[in-house]
Image (cartoon, rainbow, N blue to C red; front, side):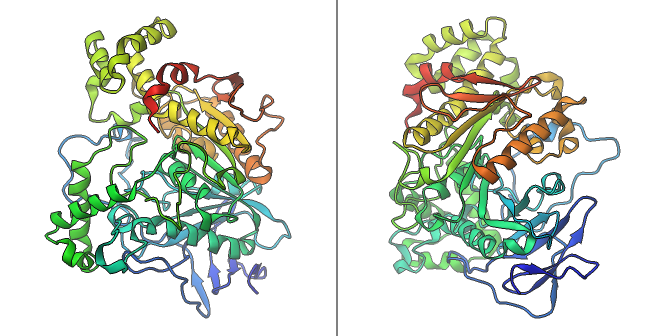
Length: 522
Protein backbone atom coordinates (compact mmCIF):
# COMPACT_ATOMS: atom_id res chain seq x y z
CA UNK A 1 0.00 0.00 0.00
CA UNK A 2 3.03 2.29 -0.10
CA UNK A 3 2.35 5.44 -2.08
CA UNK A 4 -1.35 5.53 -1.10
CA UNK A 5 -3.32 7.07 1.74
CA UNK A 6 -6.28 6.19 3.88
CA UNK A 7 -8.68 8.88 2.74
CA UNK A 8 -11.57 7.74 4.98
CA UNK A 9 -9.87 8.81 8.22
CA UNK A 10 -10.72 12.19 9.78
CA UNK A 11 -7.04 12.49 10.55
CA UNK A 12 -4.47 12.60 7.76
CA UNK A 13 -2.97 9.10 7.51
CA UNK A 14 -0.20 8.45 5.01
CA UNK A 15 0.96 4.95 4.13
CA UNK A 16 4.72 4.71 3.63
CA UNK A 17 6.95 1.77 2.80
CA UNK A 18 7.69 1.39 6.53
CA UNK A 19 4.23 1.86 7.99
CA UNK A 20 1.35 4.26 8.49
CA UNK A 21 1.80 7.80 9.79
CA UNK A 22 -0.70 10.11 11.44
CA UNK A 23 -0.23 13.79 10.64
CA UNK A 24 -1.92 17.03 11.62
CA UNK A 25 -4.37 19.24 9.74
CA UNK A 26 -3.46 22.92 9.58
CA UNK A 27 -5.65 25.75 8.35
CA UNK A 28 -4.49 25.37 4.75
CA UNK A 29 -2.65 22.04 4.49
CA UNK A 30 -1.44 18.96 6.36
CA UNK A 31 1.89 18.43 8.06
CA UNK A 32 3.69 15.26 9.12
CA UNK A 33 6.51 16.02 11.56
CA UNK A 34 9.34 13.95 12.97
CA UNK A 35 9.34 11.16 10.39
CA UNK A 36 12.36 8.93 10.87
CA UNK A 37 14.12 8.43 7.53
CA UNK A 38 17.15 6.46 8.78
CA UNK A 39 19.16 5.48 11.84
CA UNK A 40 22.91 5.66 12.44
CA UNK A 41 25.61 4.95 14.95
CA UNK A 42 28.18 7.67 15.64
CA UNK A 43 30.59 8.17 12.68
CA UNK A 44 28.85 5.38 10.73
CA UNK A 45 26.79 5.68 7.53
CA UNK A 46 23.02 5.82 7.98
CA UNK A 47 20.97 2.70 7.45
CA UNK A 48 17.29 2.09 6.84
CA UNK A 49 15.05 2.08 9.88
CA UNK A 50 12.80 -0.83 10.81
CA UNK A 51 9.15 -0.93 9.69
CA UNK A 52 6.38 -0.76 12.27
CA UNK A 53 2.84 -1.99 12.67
CA UNK A 54 -0.16 0.12 13.53
CA UNK A 55 -0.21 3.90 13.09
CA UNK A 56 2.70 6.01 14.28
CA UNK A 57 2.16 9.66 15.25
CA UNK A 58 4.04 12.23 13.17
CA UNK A 59 2.95 15.26 15.17
CA UNK A 60 6.16 16.79 16.57
CA UNK A 61 9.60 17.48 15.09
CA UNK A 62 12.37 15.03 15.83
CA UNK A 63 15.53 16.06 17.65
CA UNK A 64 17.97 18.48 16.08
CA UNK A 65 21.64 17.58 15.77
CA UNK A 66 23.88 18.35 18.77
CA UNK A 67 25.28 21.86 18.33
CA UNK A 68 24.68 24.18 21.29
CA UNK A 69 27.81 25.48 22.98
CA UNK A 70 27.51 25.00 26.74
CA UNK A 71 30.13 27.74 27.24
CA UNK A 72 29.44 30.38 24.60
CA UNK A 73 31.85 33.27 24.19
CA UNK A 74 30.98 36.44 26.12
CA UNK A 75 29.21 39.32 24.45
CA UNK A 76 26.35 39.54 21.99
CA UNK A 77 25.83 36.84 19.33
CA UNK A 78 27.48 37.46 15.98
CA UNK A 79 24.14 36.98 14.19
CA UNK A 80 22.48 40.39 14.23
CA UNK A 81 18.96 38.96 14.20
CA UNK A 82 19.23 38.67 17.98
CA UNK A 83 19.02 42.48 18.12
CA UNK A 84 15.65 42.72 16.39
CA UNK A 85 12.93 43.88 18.78
CA UNK A 86 10.38 41.26 19.77
CA UNK A 87 6.66 41.99 19.65
CA UNK A 88 5.29 43.15 22.98
CA UNK A 89 4.85 40.24 25.34
CA UNK A 90 6.53 37.76 23.04
CA UNK A 91 8.76 35.22 24.75
CA UNK A 92 11.99 33.81 23.43
CA UNK A 93 11.37 30.44 21.77
CA UNK A 94 12.16 27.42 23.89
CA UNK A 95 15.38 25.65 22.91
CA UNK A 96 14.88 22.66 20.67
CA UNK A 97 15.90 19.21 21.92
CA UNK A 98 19.24 18.00 20.56
CA UNK A 99 20.32 14.41 20.22
CA UNK A 100 22.64 12.28 18.13
CA UNK A 101 19.50 10.40 17.09
CA UNK A 102 18.42 13.21 14.74
CA UNK A 103 17.61 11.68 11.35
CA UNK A 104 14.08 13.01 10.97
CA UNK A 105 12.17 14.90 8.30
CA UNK A 106 8.92 16.86 8.01
CA UNK A 107 6.42 16.99 5.13
CA UNK A 108 3.81 19.63 4.25
CA UNK A 109 1.17 18.78 1.65
CA UNK A 110 -2.27 19.95 0.59
CA UNK A 111 -3.66 16.49 -0.23
CA UNK A 112 -2.83 12.83 0.13
CA UNK A 113 -5.14 11.07 -2.27
CA UNK A 114 -6.33 13.39 -5.01
CA UNK A 115 -4.53 11.80 -7.96
CA UNK A 116 -2.11 14.70 -8.44
CA UNK A 117 1.67 14.55 -8.45
CA UNK A 118 3.12 17.80 -7.20
CA UNK A 119 6.75 18.89 -7.46
CA UNK A 120 8.71 18.29 -4.27
CA UNK A 121 10.85 20.99 -2.65
CA UNK A 122 13.40 19.62 -0.18
CA UNK A 123 14.79 22.34 2.09
CA UNK A 124 18.30 21.98 3.52
CA UNK A 125 18.76 24.27 6.50
CA UNK A 126 21.53 26.82 6.91
CA UNK A 127 24.15 27.09 9.61
CA UNK A 128 27.06 26.07 7.40
CA UNK A 129 27.96 22.53 8.53
CA UNK A 130 28.03 23.19 12.27
CA UNK A 131 24.52 24.26 13.29
CA UNK A 132 20.93 24.85 12.32
CA UNK A 133 17.81 22.73 12.11
CA UNK A 134 14.99 21.86 9.76
CA UNK A 135 12.59 21.65 12.71
CA UNK A 136 11.74 25.37 12.60
CA UNK A 137 10.88 25.38 8.89
CA UNK A 138 7.31 26.29 7.92
CA UNK A 139 6.33 24.82 4.57
CA UNK A 140 2.63 25.68 4.88
CA UNK A 141 2.86 28.89 2.83
CA UNK A 142 3.81 26.87 -0.26
CA UNK A 143 2.01 23.59 0.41
CA UNK A 144 -1.17 25.45 1.33
CA UNK A 145 -1.52 26.70 -2.24
CA UNK A 146 -1.57 23.09 -3.43
CA UNK A 147 1.19 23.50 -6.01
CA UNK A 148 4.08 21.71 -4.27
CA UNK A 149 5.00 19.37 -1.43
CA UNK A 150 7.62 20.74 0.97
CA UNK A 151 10.12 18.67 2.98
CA UNK A 152 12.64 19.78 5.61
CA UNK A 153 15.09 17.54 7.43
CA UNK A 154 17.70 17.24 10.15
CA UNK A 155 21.07 15.55 9.72
CA UNK A 156 24.33 15.19 11.62
CA UNK A 157 26.50 18.29 11.99
CA UNK A 158 29.93 19.49 13.14
CA UNK A 159 32.14 16.80 14.71
CA UNK A 160 29.29 14.28 14.64
CA UNK A 161 28.84 14.67 10.90
CA UNK A 162 32.25 15.69 9.54
CA UNK A 163 35.17 14.19 11.48
CA UNK A 164 37.51 12.77 8.86
CA UNK A 165 39.57 9.89 10.23
CA UNK A 166 41.72 9.33 7.14
CA UNK A 167 43.97 6.39 7.98
CA UNK A 168 43.13 6.49 11.69
CA UNK A 169 41.14 3.79 13.48
CA UNK A 170 41.96 1.13 10.90
CA UNK A 171 39.39 2.28 8.41
CA UNK A 172 36.55 1.56 10.81
CA UNK A 173 35.21 5.07 10.24
CA UNK A 174 36.21 5.45 6.61
CA UNK A 175 33.16 7.57 5.72
CA UNK A 176 32.93 9.58 8.94
CA UNK A 177 34.13 12.79 7.27
CA UNK A 178 30.96 12.96 5.17
CA UNK A 179 28.27 11.18 7.17
CA UNK A 180 26.28 14.41 7.52
CA UNK A 181 25.96 14.46 3.74
CA UNK A 182 25.31 10.71 3.64
CA UNK A 183 22.34 11.42 5.91
CA UNK A 184 20.93 13.85 3.35
CA UNK A 185 21.36 11.30 0.55
CA UNK A 186 19.54 8.74 2.73
CA UNK A 187 16.72 11.28 3.22
CA UNK A 188 16.50 11.84 -0.54
CA UNK A 189 16.21 8.10 -1.09
CA UNK A 190 13.42 7.94 1.47
CA UNK A 191 11.69 10.84 -0.26
CA UNK A 192 12.04 9.18 -3.67
CA UNK A 193 10.46 5.98 -2.33
CA UNK A 194 7.69 7.53 -0.23
CA UNK A 195 6.77 11.03 -1.34
CA UNK A 196 3.96 9.79 -3.59
CA UNK A 197 2.13 8.89 -0.37
CA UNK A 198 2.06 12.62 0.38
CA UNK A 199 0.92 13.79 -3.06
CA UNK A 200 4.43 14.43 -4.38
CA UNK A 201 6.10 13.48 -7.65
CA UNK A 202 9.34 11.51 -7.13
CA UNK A 203 10.37 12.46 -10.67
CA UNK A 204 10.30 16.20 -9.86
CA UNK A 205 12.38 16.77 -6.75
CA UNK A 206 14.20 20.03 -6.11
CA UNK A 207 16.80 20.45 -3.36
CA UNK A 208 17.33 24.02 -2.17
CA UNK A 209 18.81 25.89 0.75
CA UNK A 210 20.20 29.19 1.97
CA UNK A 211 23.77 29.69 3.22
CA UNK A 212 25.03 26.28 4.39
CA UNK A 213 21.96 24.76 2.76
CA UNK A 214 23.20 26.09 -0.59
CA UNK A 215 26.63 24.60 0.08
CA UNK A 216 25.06 21.23 0.85
CA UNK A 217 23.03 21.47 -2.34
CA UNK A 218 26.22 22.18 -4.30
CA UNK A 219 27.86 19.09 -2.77
CA UNK A 220 24.93 16.93 -3.85
CA UNK A 221 25.11 18.23 -7.40
CA UNK A 222 28.62 16.78 -7.69
CA UNK A 223 28.12 13.61 -5.61
CA UNK A 224 27.76 10.41 -7.70
CA UNK A 225 25.57 8.59 -5.12
CA UNK A 226 23.12 11.52 -5.17
CA UNK A 227 22.81 11.43 -8.96
CA UNK A 228 19.23 10.94 -10.12
CA UNK A 229 17.72 11.66 -6.71
CA UNK A 230 16.83 15.25 -7.66
CA UNK A 231 16.60 17.25 -10.88
CA UNK A 232 16.66 20.88 -9.74
CA UNK A 233 18.79 22.81 -7.30
CA UNK A 234 18.32 26.14 -5.56
CA UNK A 235 21.49 27.73 -4.17
CA UNK A 236 20.55 30.81 -2.15
CA UNK A 237 23.49 32.80 -0.72
CA UNK A 238 25.49 29.61 -0.26
CA UNK A 239 27.97 29.02 -3.09
CA UNK A 240 29.76 25.69 -2.76
CA UNK A 241 32.84 25.94 -4.94
CA UNK A 242 35.23 23.82 -2.86
CA UNK A 243 35.21 21.57 0.20
CA UNK A 244 37.96 20.19 2.43
CA UNK A 245 41.02 18.37 1.19
CA UNK A 246 41.66 15.07 2.95
CA UNK A 247 45.00 16.00 4.52
CA UNK A 248 43.59 19.21 5.98
CA UNK A 249 40.55 17.37 7.33
CA UNK A 250 42.74 14.67 8.92
CA UNK A 251 44.81 17.39 10.62
CA UNK A 252 41.64 18.81 12.15
CA UNK A 253 40.79 15.38 13.55
CA UNK A 254 44.25 15.15 15.10
CA UNK A 255 43.58 18.49 16.76
CA UNK A 256 40.23 17.27 18.06
CA UNK A 257 41.89 14.16 19.50
CA UNK A 258 44.36 16.28 21.43
CA UNK A 259 41.57 18.52 22.68
CA UNK A 260 39.67 15.59 24.23
CA UNK A 261 42.79 13.84 25.55
CA UNK A 262 43.15 11.10 22.94
CA UNK A 263 45.85 10.21 20.41
CA UNK A 264 45.91 8.69 16.96
CA UNK A 265 46.58 5.33 18.61
CA UNK A 266 43.18 5.34 20.31
CA UNK A 267 41.28 7.51 17.85
CA UNK A 268 38.43 5.00 17.75
CA UNK A 269 37.59 6.03 21.31
CA UNK A 270 36.05 9.20 19.85
CA UNK A 271 33.07 7.03 19.01
CA UNK A 272 32.55 6.27 22.72
CA UNK A 273 33.03 9.75 24.20
CA UNK A 274 30.02 11.26 25.96
CA UNK A 275 28.12 13.49 23.58
CA UNK A 276 28.73 16.62 25.67
CA UNK A 277 32.48 16.05 25.76
CA UNK A 278 32.78 15.55 22.02
CA UNK A 279 30.65 18.64 21.42
CA UNK A 280 32.79 20.72 23.78
CA UNK A 281 35.92 19.50 21.98
CA UNK A 282 34.41 20.50 18.65
CA UNK A 283 33.60 24.01 19.88
CA UNK A 284 37.11 24.47 21.23
CA UNK A 285 38.72 23.45 17.93
CA UNK A 286 36.28 25.47 15.83
CA UNK A 287 36.92 28.58 17.94
CA UNK A 288 40.62 28.34 17.09
CA UNK A 289 40.00 27.65 13.39
CA UNK A 290 37.64 30.39 12.31
CA UNK A 291 37.11 30.86 8.58
CA UNK A 292 38.85 33.78 6.94
CA UNK A 293 35.88 34.43 4.64
CA UNK A 294 32.40 33.15 3.93
CA UNK A 295 33.29 30.37 1.47
CA UNK A 296 36.23 29.02 3.50
CA UNK A 297 35.58 25.77 5.37
CA UNK A 298 38.60 25.25 7.64
CA UNK A 299 37.21 22.45 9.81
CA UNK A 300 34.40 19.92 10.20
CA UNK A 301 32.98 20.20 6.70
CA UNK A 302 32.57 17.75 3.79
CA UNK A 303 35.73 16.10 2.48
CA UNK A 304 36.91 15.13 -0.98
CA UNK A 305 36.24 11.39 -1.25
CA UNK A 306 36.56 8.89 -4.12
CA UNK A 307 32.98 7.69 -3.69
CA UNK A 308 31.03 10.61 -2.29
CA UNK A 309 32.80 13.66 -3.72
CA UNK A 310 35.56 12.81 -6.21
CA UNK A 311 36.06 16.46 -7.23
CA UNK A 312 35.27 19.91 -5.88
CA UNK A 313 31.78 20.82 -7.13
CA UNK A 314 32.66 24.07 -8.91
CA UNK A 315 36.42 24.55 -8.72
CA UNK A 316 38.18 25.09 -11.01
CA UNK A 317 35.14 24.15 -13.11
CA UNK A 318 31.82 22.38 -12.75
CA UNK A 319 32.34 18.76 -11.72
CA UNK A 320 31.07 15.91 -13.86
CA UNK A 321 27.36 15.44 -13.24
CA UNK A 322 26.79 18.88 -11.72
CA UNK A 323 25.31 20.20 -14.94
CA UNK A 324 22.77 17.36 -15.11
CA UNK A 325 20.89 19.33 -12.46
CA UNK A 326 19.23 22.63 -13.39
CA UNK A 327 20.31 25.36 -10.96
CA UNK A 328 18.71 28.57 -9.70
CA UNK A 329 21.39 30.57 -7.88
CA UNK A 330 21.76 34.01 -6.36
CA UNK A 331 22.39 36.14 -3.32
CA UNK A 332 21.26 39.29 -1.54
CA UNK A 333 22.77 42.69 -2.20
CA UNK A 334 24.29 43.43 1.23
CA UNK A 335 24.71 40.00 2.82
CA UNK A 336 27.33 40.50 5.47
CA UNK A 337 25.57 42.83 7.91
CA UNK A 338 23.90 39.64 9.15
CA UNK A 339 27.20 38.62 10.77
CA UNK A 340 27.95 41.93 12.52
CA UNK A 341 25.92 41.44 15.68
CA UNK A 342 29.08 41.66 17.79
CA UNK A 343 30.82 44.22 15.56
CA UNK A 344 28.98 47.55 15.99
CA UNK A 345 32.04 49.45 14.73
CA UNK A 346 31.42 48.06 11.24
CA UNK A 347 28.33 50.26 10.96
CA UNK A 348 30.19 53.49 11.86
CA UNK A 349 33.52 53.14 10.05
CA UNK A 350 35.62 56.16 9.23
CA UNK A 351 37.46 56.35 5.92
CA UNK A 352 40.59 55.08 7.67
CA UNK A 353 38.75 52.18 9.23
CA UNK A 354 37.14 51.35 5.88
CA UNK A 355 40.56 51.27 4.21
CA UNK A 356 42.04 49.07 6.94
CA UNK A 357 39.25 46.53 6.68
CA UNK A 358 39.33 46.32 2.90
CA UNK A 359 43.09 45.81 3.07
CA UNK A 360 42.58 42.61 5.08
CA UNK A 361 41.11 40.89 2.02
CA UNK A 362 42.25 43.06 -0.90
CA UNK A 363 45.91 43.55 -0.02
CA UNK A 364 47.77 45.46 -2.71
CA UNK A 365 44.52 45.92 -4.63
CA UNK A 366 43.04 48.03 -1.84
CA UNK A 367 43.49 51.47 -3.41
CA UNK A 368 42.06 50.57 -6.79
CA UNK A 369 39.13 48.83 -5.07
CA UNK A 370 38.42 51.90 -2.94
CA UNK A 371 38.44 54.11 -6.03
CA UNK A 372 36.08 51.76 -7.86
CA UNK A 373 33.55 51.68 -5.02
CA UNK A 374 33.76 55.45 -4.57
CA UNK A 375 32.81 55.89 -8.23
CA UNK A 376 30.03 53.31 -8.02
CA UNK A 377 28.59 54.61 -4.71
CA UNK A 378 29.49 58.34 -4.56
CA UNK A 379 26.89 59.22 -1.92
CA UNK A 380 27.47 56.26 0.39
CA UNK A 381 29.18 56.50 3.76
CA UNK A 382 32.44 54.67 4.39
CA UNK A 383 30.55 52.07 6.43
CA UNK A 384 28.03 51.47 3.67
CA UNK A 385 30.76 51.16 1.03
CA UNK A 386 32.51 48.63 3.21
CA UNK A 387 29.30 46.63 3.67
CA UNK A 388 28.88 46.56 -0.10
CA UNK A 389 32.50 45.71 -0.91
CA UNK A 390 32.72 43.03 1.77
CA UNK A 391 29.40 41.49 0.69
CA UNK A 392 30.51 41.49 -2.94
CA UNK A 393 33.80 39.84 -2.03
CA UNK A 394 32.21 37.30 0.29
CA UNK A 395 29.16 36.24 -1.73
CA UNK A 396 28.47 38.04 -5.01
CA UNK A 397 31.89 37.07 -6.36
CA UNK A 398 31.70 33.30 -5.64
CA UNK A 399 27.99 33.15 -6.56
CA UNK A 400 28.82 34.65 -9.96
CA UNK A 401 31.71 32.21 -10.38
CA UNK A 402 29.47 29.22 -9.63
CA UNK A 403 26.81 30.46 -12.04
CA UNK A 404 29.44 31.08 -14.74
CA UNK A 405 30.97 27.63 -14.34
CA UNK A 406 27.64 25.82 -14.32
CA UNK A 407 26.41 27.65 -17.40
CA UNK A 408 29.75 27.38 -19.24
CA UNK A 409 29.66 23.60 -18.83
CA UNK A 410 26.21 23.47 -20.43
CA UNK A 411 23.98 23.46 -17.36
CA UNK A 412 20.57 25.08 -17.26
CA UNK A 413 21.19 28.09 -15.03
CA UNK A 414 19.02 30.94 -13.76
CA UNK A 415 20.33 33.77 -11.56
CA UNK A 416 18.67 36.23 -9.20
CA UNK A 417 19.56 38.88 -6.63
CA UNK A 418 17.40 40.23 -3.81
CA UNK A 419 17.84 44.00 -3.54
CA UNK A 420 14.99 44.82 -1.15
CA UNK A 421 16.34 47.04 1.63
CA UNK A 422 15.36 45.99 5.12
CA UNK A 423 14.07 48.85 7.28
CA UNK A 424 15.13 47.02 10.48
CA UNK A 425 17.53 48.68 12.93
CA UNK A 426 17.25 52.04 11.23
CA UNK A 427 17.83 50.68 7.73
CA UNK A 428 21.52 49.98 8.25
CA UNK A 429 21.33 46.30 7.30
CA UNK A 430 20.48 46.57 3.59
CA UNK A 431 19.46 43.33 1.86
CA UNK A 432 21.10 41.11 4.44
CA UNK A 433 21.81 37.38 4.57
CA UNK A 434 18.65 35.19 4.93
CA UNK A 435 16.30 38.09 4.04
CA UNK A 436 14.83 35.89 1.30
CA UNK A 437 13.80 33.04 3.61
CA UNK A 438 10.24 34.08 4.45
CA UNK A 439 9.77 35.27 0.87
CA UNK A 440 10.71 31.91 -0.63
CA UNK A 441 8.36 30.12 1.75
CA UNK A 442 5.51 32.59 1.16
CA UNK A 443 5.33 33.45 4.86
CA UNK A 444 5.94 37.23 4.78
CA UNK A 445 4.15 37.85 8.08
CA UNK A 446 6.76 35.73 9.83
CA UNK A 447 9.48 37.96 8.35
CA UNK A 448 7.97 41.37 9.09
CA UNK A 449 10.71 42.26 11.61
CA UNK A 450 13.16 42.33 8.69
CA UNK A 451 10.85 42.98 5.74
CA UNK A 452 8.85 45.83 7.24
CA UNK A 453 5.20 46.77 6.74
CA UNK A 454 3.18 47.22 3.58
CA UNK A 455 2.29 45.22 0.50
CA UNK A 456 5.77 44.87 -1.02
CA UNK A 457 6.81 41.86 1.11
CA UNK A 458 3.52 40.13 0.28
CA UNK A 459 4.01 40.69 -3.45
CA UNK A 460 7.64 39.58 -3.35
CA UNK A 461 6.74 36.49 -1.34
CA UNK A 462 4.20 35.53 -3.97
CA UNK A 463 6.56 36.25 -6.86
CA UNK A 464 9.57 34.46 -5.43
CA UNK A 465 7.79 31.43 -3.98
CA UNK A 466 5.82 30.87 -7.19
CA UNK A 467 8.97 31.24 -9.32
CA UNK A 468 10.79 28.67 -7.17
CA UNK A 469 7.81 26.29 -7.41
CA UNK A 470 7.72 26.66 -11.21
CA UNK A 471 11.43 25.95 -11.32
CA UNK A 472 10.92 22.84 -9.17
CA UNK A 473 8.15 21.71 -11.50
CA UNK A 474 9.71 22.44 -14.88
CA UNK A 475 13.29 23.71 -14.53
CA UNK A 476 12.13 27.17 -15.68
CA UNK A 477 11.04 29.92 -13.22
CA UNK A 478 9.26 32.08 -15.80
CA UNK A 479 5.65 33.14 -15.24
CA UNK A 480 3.24 35.94 -16.05
CA UNK A 481 3.94 37.67 -12.74
CA UNK A 482 7.58 38.39 -13.70
CA UNK A 483 9.47 40.04 -16.54
CA UNK A 484 10.86 37.48 -18.98
CA UNK A 485 13.71 35.64 -17.21
CA UNK A 486 16.32 34.36 -19.70
CA UNK A 487 18.68 31.54 -18.92
CA UNK A 488 21.98 32.71 -17.49
CA UNK A 489 25.13 32.50 -19.57
CA UNK A 490 28.66 33.75 -18.91
CA UNK A 491 28.31 36.51 -21.52
CA UNK A 492 25.04 38.30 -20.76
CA UNK A 493 24.69 37.12 -17.12
CA UNK A 494 20.93 37.75 -17.10
CA UNK A 495 19.80 38.16 -13.47
CA UNK A 496 16.35 38.80 -11.99
CA UNK A 497 16.48 41.57 -9.38
CA UNK A 498 13.75 41.22 -6.77
CA UNK A 499 12.94 44.59 -5.23
CA UNK A 500 10.10 47.05 -4.83
CA UNK A 501 10.00 46.88 -8.62
CA UNK A 502 11.25 43.51 -9.83
CA UNK A 503 13.25 43.80 -13.04
CA UNK A 504 15.78 41.97 -15.19
CA UNK A 505 19.40 43.16 -15.26
CA UNK A 506 22.47 42.01 -17.12
CA UNK A 507 25.69 41.38 -15.18
CA UNK A 508 24.60 43.31 -12.06
CA UNK A 509 27.60 41.96 -10.11
CA UNK A 510 30.06 43.24 -12.72
CA UNK A 511 31.92 45.46 -10.26
CA UNK A 512 32.80 42.53 -8.01
CA UNK A 513 33.52 40.23 -10.94
CA UNK A 514 35.85 42.65 -12.71
CA UNK A 515 37.64 44.18 -9.75
CA UNK A 516 37.84 41.20 -7.39
CA UNK A 517 38.29 38.17 -9.66
CA UNK A 518 41.97 37.67 -8.62
CA UNK A 519 40.83 37.54 -4.99
CA UNK A 520 38.49 34.57 -5.48
CA UNK A 521 41.18 31.90 -5.28
CA UNK A 522 38.73 29.07 -5.70
